[in-house]
Length: 371
Figure (tube, rainbow, N blue to C red):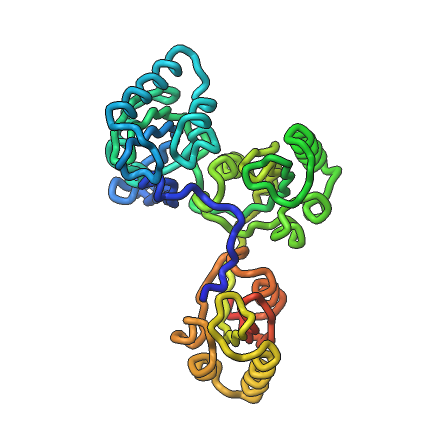
């Protein structure tokens, strides 16, 4: 069982292209004898690459595809697409219409990645290209790639904190809500929200509550918590990386619709331990207890804890979470990583406080904040 919240945002499937968007750590630095920050040859991380591509697989290639093309036919199609691009055709449009990678939904855009995160032939092709240069066809086990290396003015940080307001629309690839607004209307509304937020005429949290189509975040000010860039849509991570703390973005389009983003300071991580009592209606639960029986058991355990019994011992004996093996200790975690009710119980109480029972989709929790 995992009580971490499921984000509605996800990066591209790595099954479609072996090295799609994994977290790239920034270069570490060392302090020289003169006190200045100097890069260490042993700890310096490779510069993040940025690219988009068109993938044409053949029948039997490693890509998850229904292609019936032979290897030679796929190569010829890739050659024809490269010729169209050289003659002035729009890369974004061709990626959307012809690529067989999930990145086609974003014009073939793969975001930013460390060299070692892509298959070798793909990485070498990007590294050898100049910013803005199109290369290919390049062969990998997934098919033939037409690749454009893109400039990278705002490398992704290791992580950031962010809130958003989502304005979805009818026809969006992953439409949120049931609004029948058009794409044009959604864009205009997002532009208005962004402009008024930048001018101080709107409150972000209130605007999220009133206007955002993301039901998972509108009740907490639009907060997505602390995220790794690879866990968001690449265009979102690009936009966030270009912002300073508390700055507001222009509208950013993703398959969900248009996002207005606010970058925030990364808060200190939280820490907690818990005892989870699941019931037969809990998410993914094999438990046989009824909801009422689970609540009664949680209250019984809470009374024992308040009477002085050892938390770790009770967790090991009664908790339905794998953390029972560590006495219920969940360690440290960033804000936004736990389901809202659990996180709120931690944030609203002091270190050492016993809280509960707290209900989530997973059952009833007895919680002690540790950090």
